[in-house]
Length: 499
Image: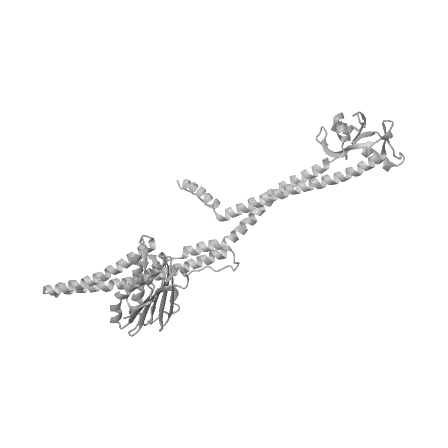
């Protein structure tokens, strides 16, 4: 049974190896290089054959010219004019007569060599065709043994101006044998070259995917408690460096998200613990010390107030979860943004008066935007709540609704003279659960979800949000929403609402 288990694991390992990126890269490299080597070999074979054929053709042309100088036709008979006492001329004539044929215009063969006879004597029709050509023709023919010969056939003039068919040839067997031997040796060496290419490709592929293996190894070491790991760049500015940068940015975002979640858990625990402790205290007091119905009623009223705090916390968390998951469907209708802002500002006049904060508004009525009234009111309420909450006594909060400088947009501004936001905190104020912590805001309650809702609502309405702040001088939020139309053709004068 153990041996069977080992046998079953081997195919799995083999399959995993064959599916590995390094193996596939190597295989692709080998296949590409193999096809390239074969193509180069075939191209070199064709080039070599053409070059050797050109050399044979050039030699045949020289022999053709020499043969016409030695051969004369007199009285219908061929005469080779050469010095019999000159061995060199005798050798040249003998070589020229090795593969040749001479025939008259009717196709009657006057003289031919034995070698040409093995190639095949031309028919009268073929002889007539060649004689009618303006230039001699060169072609390749083979004898009975398959040996190739390059033949040049044309016409020569005899006595009395008669035309005679003359063909001269030479063997190109050595050319073909040279090319064939080269290709045989080349393809015998090809497997070795491909094998060496495979080894080189395996090494190069291993070096290429080394950063990927490093990314995988680093990813395996990352846990929720250790998100600070990063992979050093190769400084090659290539795709792998881009991958490393993306991975490092991802771990940084994960680390930031985990920090937010930890902070959120701490904040939620604190926010939930406070009302729960109060509820328990009220119930314990009522249980052990209350003696009259009024005392029991007071304890229950206090407990219900703390339960309401718990309910608002849970509702906020559920609402944010539904918004981010797409379960919260917006009911968009044309809204007069100035009218909506005026209603919300009226609701915040009493809390502002209690803090001795002057809340004012400058509104341009008649500018419509296609929006969900409930969510827009929540957006404005969150901004005003933060503005009033973080503005010290004697400060000011001003809201403005007007047409944006760019056509097709409405601008909503909420400006206060509060404690402000440090520059290093500005990029994170719209993150979930993020709270600015300093001496002025340390004791201010909240989960850090308000501005997250604001950012989501603006995005859901295809708007933009921008914030400017200076510590100790105040904060200004600017929201731009798409305008639907103006309710009035002429732009009305701004209406100021003050406390």
